[in-house]
Length: 219
Image 1: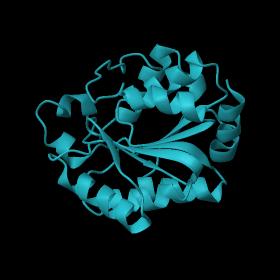
Image 2: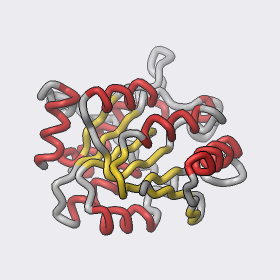
Image 3: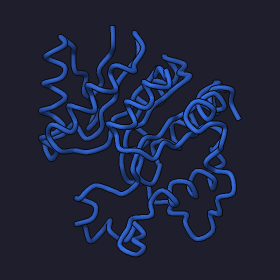
Image 4: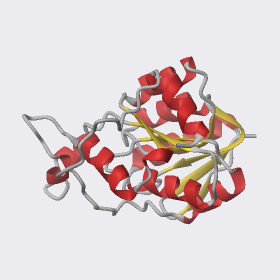
C-alpha cells in the first residue's frame, strides 16, 4: 500500500480498509468501453506526478484502474480516490445494453461490488480508495478532511447544472497547477458541454479538447 493511500484510508475511513474482508467471487465484470485509456491520462500522470487523483463517477472502474496502473508503472506514491454512489445514472437504468451490468438485486444496483472485484482482479487495490457518496457530499467530505487533489477526473452526472456544481465543488480541492479532466465533452452530452464552457468562461480558463475529453488547468 502506498503512503498516500494509507493517509487517505486514515482520513476518510478511520483506518478501516474498504477491501478488507470483501469476497469478489462472482462480481468481476471486465467491460471497458468508456474511453478509459485516453492519452491525457498518461500525460497528466507524467507531468503532474500526482499524489492524489480524485475521480468523480467510477461505475465499473475502468478509468480508475487505468490511473492506478499508471501510478504503479511510474513508481509513484499516489492514490486514486473514487467518489460514486455506485447506483448508476438514469440513462444506464434505461439502457437495455447497460442495465444487466448494474447487477440489480432486490431493485438496487450493486455496481460497488463490481468495482471492488474489478480492482482486486487487476491487483491495483493498493492504489485505489473508494468513497461511496454522492458527488456533492463527497466533495464536502473531502474538503472537511483536508484532501487536496493534484488531478481531477469528472465523469458523474451528465445533467445540465449537475455538471457545473461538480466542477465548482471539486475545483476548490484542486491545487494550483493541477488539471481537471472532464469526460463526455461532446454534442451528444449538451449538458456537459454547456456547463464546462460556462464554468471556464466565468473563470477565464481555456478549454482544451481532445476527442470527448475537456481539460482545464488551474493557474
